Length: 175
Image (cartoon, rainbow, N blue to C red; front, side, top):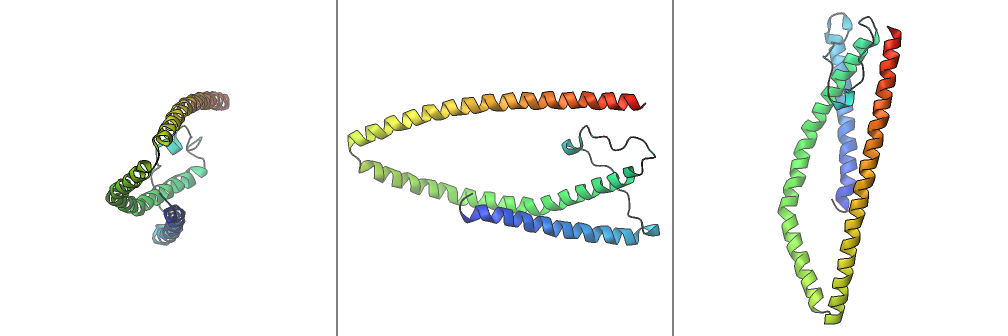
C-alpha cells in the first residue's frame, strides 16, 4: 500500500473494531435481558491456536469457567463480525491492485527505459555493476535474516517447551 492507503488501514481497522465492540455490547445486553433470570446464555468454548495449551479451568466447580466460556463466545462472535466486514474490503483492495498495478508497472518500465537511453554507455555499465553488487548484498542479507529467524524460532520453541513442562509439574503437584 502506498501513501494515503497506509493511513486508511488503521483508521478503517479502528473504526471497524469500535463498531464491532458496540455491537457486541448491545448483543450481550439484549441476551442478558432475554435469557431466563437475566443471565446471559453460555456459548460453547472456542478452540484454535489462540487458546492452545491453556486450560479452561482446573475443576468443574470453578466459577470462572462460565465466564471463560462466555468470553470465548464473545471472542468468536467478534472475530466472525470482524471478518464479515474485513473480507469484502480486502477483496476490493485486491481488485484495485489487479486493475492498476499492471498499468503502473508498464508506465514505470517505459519511464526507466527512457532514462536509461539518455545515459552514456559508461554510466550504464557503472549502474549495471552497482545493481549487481546490490543484488549480491541483498541475497546475503536474506540468508542472514533466515538464519536469525530460524535461531529465534528454535529459542521460542525451547521456551515454550520449558514452560509447558513447568505447567505439567504444577498441575501434577496439585493432584
